[in-house]
Length: 274
Image (cartoon, rainbow, N blue to C red; front, side, top):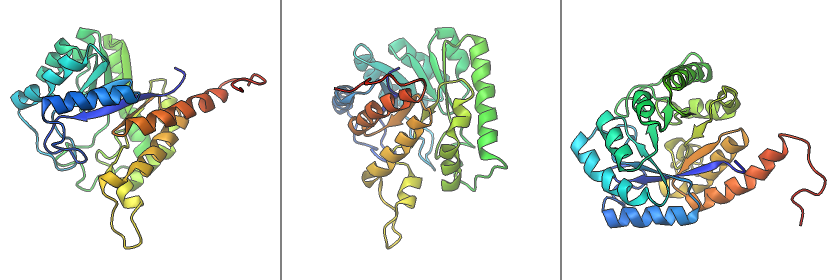
């Protein structure tokens, strides 16, 4: 790769924390998907069940109705991943054309193996409904590394041809945990599995960037924090970042790629110069 990959978020949900309800209509979802493709998205991640803190699960039937038409329409045009924890939804999404399972439960690797598709294992403490209820770790970096390497190794041994690991920023973590994972991201990169990172518009960014009055920045105002953290992650070795703001992230990735590559070997005099 000449640059890190950009995964665009397409939530077809009524209750996602940042864009809930905006793309429930199929035409609007497809319009947004095509816009992200034009902005440089390498993968479009379609999700029909919110995983925001405190979110209630949705039925299998509702999730299928939300995601399958979108995947069928976009899959001929761009690589599509499905963000789900339900085996039946995963199978249907793959039949509809998705080629990557974005799995916050880190349990669906047998489905990825049997279908010969990619799988991204994320770490989450608890469930979306409970994960932010006082999450604690003795060693947040070490525990999450060990968990992800164990799941990724099982998947690889089962025959999954493409395995990603994701530390799960914001999924059962305090702001301090999130910052520690970002600070030590190279520990995950050193595992040898490609690393996927998602910080886009998340709550800890709003807290850290609170104004003089102490009011958290709302999701619509978190672009600077999102770009800052994904740029840090890419420089630390992340191979793909999951974002809402594709155009700005694509520009950052295009700049990070040559910078990161130049540190991996001897520079050639004049390389890249006009």
